[in-house]
Image 1 (spheres, one colour):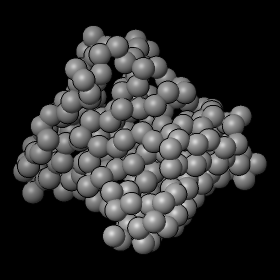
Image 2: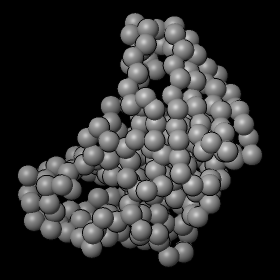
Image 3: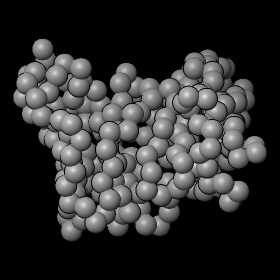
Image 4: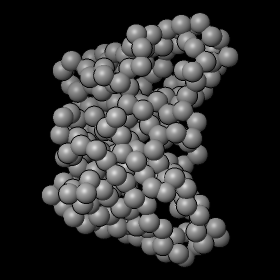
Length: 111
Length: 114
């Protein structure tokens, strides 16, 4: 399978704490994206990092990419209850243009 | 439209019946994707369309599944002779082009086979 895997599968933190999620993948990629899903329906794009980038920021989000380890991390700083959702990484492998999604991390932020 | 639209939002069907799921992508988006998500699981890639090129059907789980995209816009995913294991949320996404662009998702169709 070309799917990535997120780690941990579930994460529960207090509001105001930082949340870190990791993604590992198997093949060489063009880019990696992180998505958020509320209530098991549509996904919302958060951030895209290209294979030649190592770190990217967007508001309270920080993404890193280590292509030598085939891994990425998503850091959400100063978490809020509204950040409660499932987070998925998606890779765009060199072999094609479809996106392959990981298994997701379920984040719960406790008010 | 303003976003990706999927219909119906929910579908309950009897085992053995055929179903059609519809996806209206964002106008001008040439790439269209179908995914399936079982309860509490990740997204399983099904099929990908890019412009007028032959679709990538490598993710379709069986020959009961088929999809078409008419006029480079609306797409229909058809499941024939539905089985209980087909129950899932079917998600459609579109992007401006293939490659390094974000995908925009519809709200999905929740299919329940009874």
